[in-house]
Length: 92
Image 1: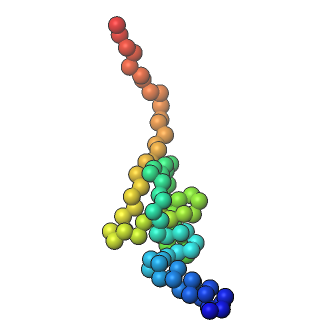
Image 2: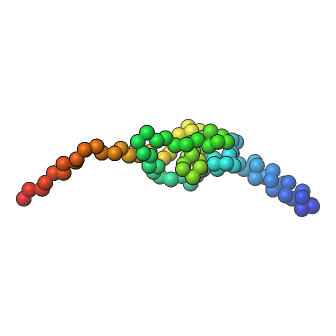
Image 3: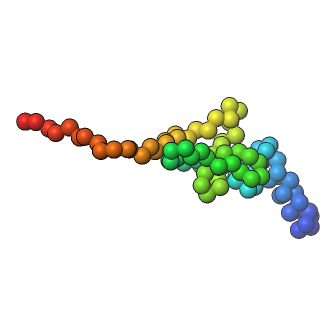
């Protein structure tokens, strides 16, 4: 078997292993997701320019490809406190 034929066979095997809808731009689907994503008030995750799926600030997918298409990431929105905050004073 020639080198080119082996490379073609390897490329075909890799293509068969990749899930349908694989995106080379964001890496969808991913099994290595961040457990928490912090968002400032009014922010939302960006979308991949190639496939339109949700991505983090580095452009990596936030989706796993599970049938439910749920994003297993805990989203935390940070809100700025306005005005002074009165802390309770402990009494003895």
